[in-house]
Picture 1: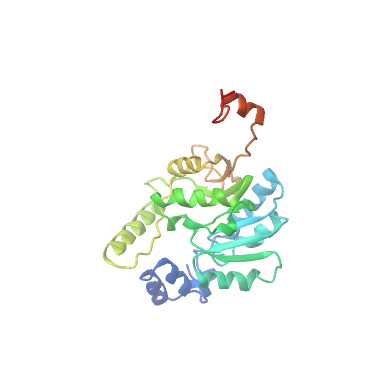
Picture 2: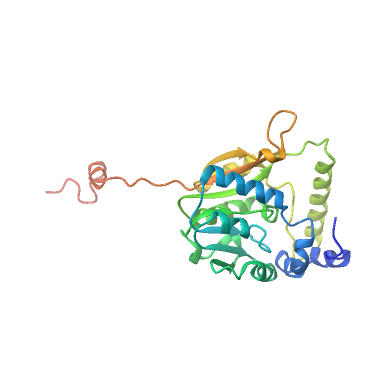
Length: 264
């Protein structure tokens, strides 16, 4: 699974018994040589789908950008500034080394559950790859609300999501086993390291996106084929911040009349 340039088993163990932030600081220099980096074929499929369905965008935001795997894609899709956000200073340092020379790429260190005010309302496209396992289900509303606030009206939050694995699949058992180990680890060791593979089901995600205010649709990523029942193995989620149509002032007066309505 790992190349000779990747982390050793000992280094992975040290990371696993650290906090999420500290663990990724330690792993950052070798992260791109692990299978945890988002594969290029996923990035390419998402870029192709966004270009075909949406065209180009203004400013872009990569939420939990890590070492910047998606920043190249964003610079091609976006005409304006591109910003990578991550909690780990180590991961941001690697991303800046790889992409900082591009004059329109910047970086912000922040918790995605509490995006800073400087990012509010300034982006036309937000993406995120491979990070959702770090958020517990009750943290999704804060995450999605923050991304909603970072988008301009009409802006899109896009990310891929895979079809649920059947219990007959060896991958289902591997994911279930990993999650069980992590739950035991977090029950007996502090600080916690939040990383789970089965805490991001589409039904709950769609509900939380809608509750944050997004209009949600999906499109199949045909590069990855379809399951025996005909459904796509991977979809691209397109969560759009609606464009609010201003209500004419005259209509507002007719409806309510304000606190002085009826006075002469």
